Length: 168
Image (cartoon, rainbow, N blue to C red; front, side, top):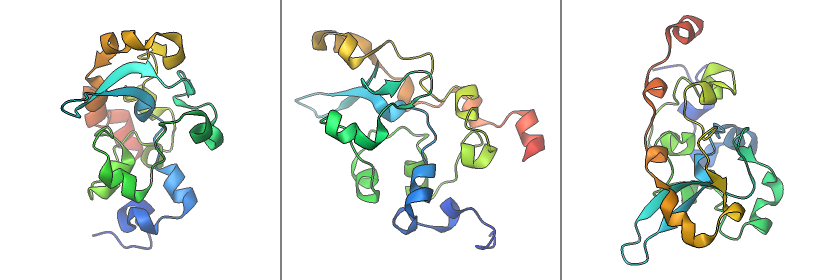
């Protein structure tokens, strides 16, 4: 086991023990949680769409108004340790979910790679995959945009490329 003085914070701290800077740095910038999700009224099952929140920067895969997002988006979920445990729609690649489950971050996470662009290079982010933003389509069309890919990891995300293995 790694010495706690040299081990990265996400391996040694629980979500509750992280300070606000550590907490915010866990976000990998994939944008998957900013995709519109539909919930079946009967079964309560959640389905992802390829429609982004109206505040999603489709290229940068970040919120265009992060500090004020909850005032603008009624159903925007603020992640806390409690919500991470309670919601079941976080993507399998989500660092908050991984840490809560006692797992390590993937090679493409910027805290591991040192580069915020590796999430895009690995094909994990929503860059190039968003069909529209939610204010660009009528609500009745959302069901035609249900997708499964946000709940899967692309093949390239599973194993670190040879060039990345040599770096770290």
